[in-house]
Image (cartoon, rainbow over the protein chains, first blue to last red):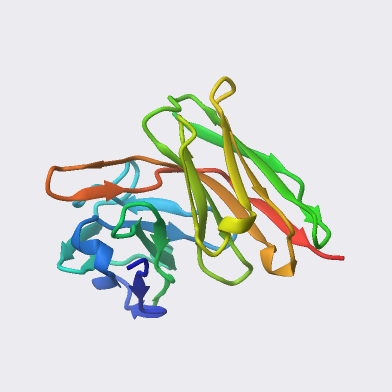
Length: 108
Length: 124
């Protein structure tokens, strides 16, 4: 299968914890990667592999995986975390790259 | 620190061919997939295709008939051509580097370095 499914929108109160999920058959064999995109900017990698953060990404961002579902958790959401978040992996064959449809995170 | 610099024509007429190039600075070209991704106005990310250092390509099936991705390892550059463009191809186009591998029991793939994006508008 070559689809990754995300909820279109999620909201979180400032300082609270939010989980953004991504579902797809390929996630049974591929770790999802996660990207943050703010308006007018290129996507930025925030989580990759089992639960790795690139340099400069705050440790309030974490990733996890179970079965066909990957999750991005933001613990103590900040106003600057308001953005679109996309998950990504390869498909089950390994030949194609797939993105989730994106989740718009609103910090209240 | 690896940087990707991309360029190409930003305004096209219907039926023309989109042509973009992405140059890799500060890092090795081998050992990665090099991808093109696009984002129509107000919409999500769409993977177009990829190439590795040896020239092996994979394309999104929905675009495969119109896409060609090529590589010039002597210049550390890779390029995208999309033929017969229409208004539906209007988007911001990004290039990106894709590390990949496995932990023995699970695979990983991600895009860790992105170009700044090129806005391409198709209009008569």
